[in-house]
Image (cartoon, rainbow, N blue to C red; front, side):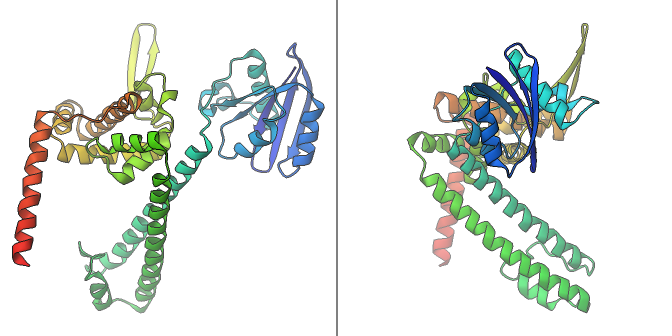
Length: 360
């Protein structure tokens, strides 16, 4: 049995091969384009196991080598501190360390999403990028108008284009505004396509996937968009040993540093999915505004820790609750205060609909 540590990069891979006794028997370096040479080398090893870090481009290599291997490990790069903190860091050293830990059986494993989970993440992340692009362009347009004291709240509403055309600006700024508006319209069109593609993908899911969406949207503050992001980033919730570990996965849990009997509480780790953290904070703000239960939690923490820490704490608690619901297959249950608030808002909506009908 051979144990192969692979340090994968965009254009090259470095290999370190150990035998059953742990002795290094060979090192190799290949271009990622030389797939035939890579396959031929691994076939020459006969019986082998390999490991590779969970970078963004590992999937093609795994699919290439998995049929030939006796086993393999997808390594969690964030937990390989020996490599990350090494002062003598190179491709050769990284591959050597990976092969040694593979031989010892002490590699920290990462989760490998299924093909459908990868598709879901791809679409959810692309939709988020499209939304960010629209927001960025709107900020740039507002910045130009702010120089003329001509920014308006309803700038991107039905009357916004008329206002933009009526503002007296320099020839250079008019050119920039026209270009930004063209980009903005194109970005909106791409966002609409991304939403439609994601919705079509969601509708094609099986019964378990649809149930997960119903559970997610039953939680206050989580709508269709946030639900898709959260479900895509969490993937299979059964991979979390405890519901609290979901908060750590999102980087919403506070870090700790201990020595002897002293433990120092640090800020949140911010490790893991940045998009998942953003989605849960957005959901938390919505829940605090519209749910009596979560508003009470927020106000209680805010008195002790301040508003920023309070909203992060609410986001973490909401993620833990959602993970627990997804694991158990149960819907979110409102408490008495939430039921009263929901009934009040329903009455307001009905009254508003009656007034609209009467006005028509």
